[in-house]
Image (tube, rainbow, N blue to C red; front, side, top):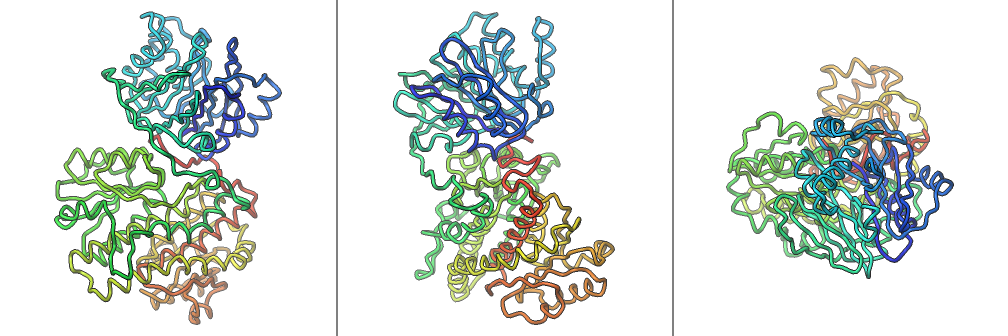
Length: 615
């Protein structure tokens, strides 16, 4: 789960690489490094810490000239975060330099064999094993770098995106991919390499996304050559035009990307249903569903596979699909799904949800489901991502880039897509009347403006955050459609403030968690008027009688909860199935403000990375 950047061309490489690493730092930020080549010498600098630490060290340590370079920002897997384990790594001869995202699972056996052949190792990483394996193949078989990389990768078990160069061939970088994303930006006599397009968006709009088990040899003044790693077959690469723009990946005046992305949700939700939700015509148009309607209508059940925030969106979808379309739904952690020998048949639809489209566990679950004959539908945000390519059909959320590690607009746009799917299937199955269908479409169309209204609670949420910022535990409670929102609210607080928090179905409180409640325990209760309102009010009374501190998320104009709660945060009224799109907003803001008040790194919380590309 790391960020890769590379450049070869006519410009100075260093400014491009350092800025690119800063843009990719959401992918990993416990260490970073850069290798530059000026035609004579490889200049390498790396350090534990963030890209800012690297920049300060590097500019005092080495000269930064050179038109070829590679850089890396790391989330550690093999070896603790320190200077030695940071990337790039060089081979024993010093001729080859490599950066790597992923895990080489058989690195230990490869390392033992290389030690027998006289190789020594400075780091604890699997990556240093890989670069020396490439060197061993290159020398023992007297091969060019590209061929040596291909042969070495055929001996590797695991996942990787790599970029490697040989100081004896200063006009060439070799890259390869299996399970981790890699994009090649194509300019005028220059090439860019990155984990996603953000590092080179101001230089070119043309990019090649490598498929799994593909490698490319990138040379100045020549076309990119792409080959299959397994059989050396040439591939005709597809050059696509990027839709990303520079403004989308900058903070735009906000203090943090997370806050920007919270406030982007009205537009993100609108962009997600734009062209798909046609309320005037009483229609929902989703090409991936329309083209496969027979499969959806014949399905015995839907299985949702996802991780983290996407799993919570899947839980909301379970309620929505079963309520509207009357299709049985099971929601599975993708990380557990493949390991428990699940029962999957050709009559199942598997919906895989992932913001990045690169989540390793979810990709593994997709491959398992396809091997059993299930139809797999992907819901993701990143065009051209691995999940978009691996699934049989799908729908993009169109949320725009989400840089903050803690997902916000990903959650609400995923729910939006899944709601559209449920409504379309409900109409096709006849489980919803024409008038109810139209009413749902009108209400969903109004959600962006209602999210705008919910965001106006920001100042009051900040006041509440100041009161509870020093709490060591939080409990989040919700029922029905809002139980997953309670889970998501607790996850957000944990992720960015490091305060322990639990989400629970409100009715389950008395089956254990009630023992935790005292005057020190803040309890966030989602108590909108729709659904099980009276039952939730009863739960609040139980908390109140035990002196718990109650923060109520209520429908605008509520009076009953206001009499019992210590604080109430209002959201606009909507249909019960759409309430998660509103109730999650104050919970996102609460987590954000508490984390800021505790002086935490909101966009880059410790131990986490945005795109989880390893198991």
